[in-house]
Length: 175
Image 1 (tube, one colour):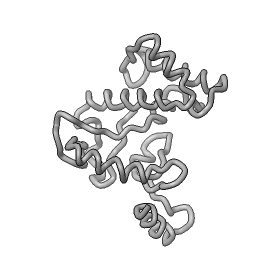
Image 2 (cartoon, one colour):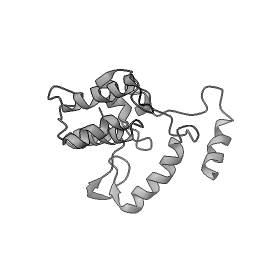
Image 3 (cartoon, helix red, strand yellow):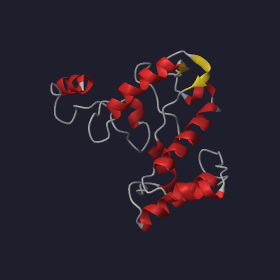
Image 4 (cartoon, one colour):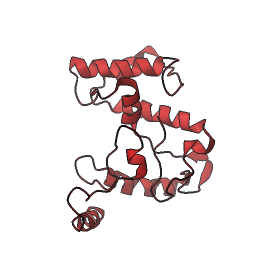
């Protein structure tokens, strides 16, 4: 909670509407991600605080940010970016109504299509497919979307990171 207090104290010195900064990568696509300083609602700042320390302790490499074991690479993904590319702004999480279930179905179908972005085809069994569509939270599907983003980034030079990437801010893997 000291991390939250530090962010709150700094944010309270900023003008209204600018209390939670966004990185360049947060606004690099039509879908803006949550500020990494957000410690409430979706507590991205707390996830960052806990996660980065664990990644460093595990010795993984974080391209552009931290040199660790080159054979174990951690990339930041944002599943909504890829979901948006596949189904636009339709909601697919936190509900099992017909519209959200249909949106999850459309995302899975898009991932299975050879013509879909990012030119990787999801190869899965029937049970996995059913669980991705049935999971009303969307968490399983989000994990697959991040996996696809990481797989795509692994095929790109320098994991697709732009040369002008801010080495403090990092970058979200491309969709």
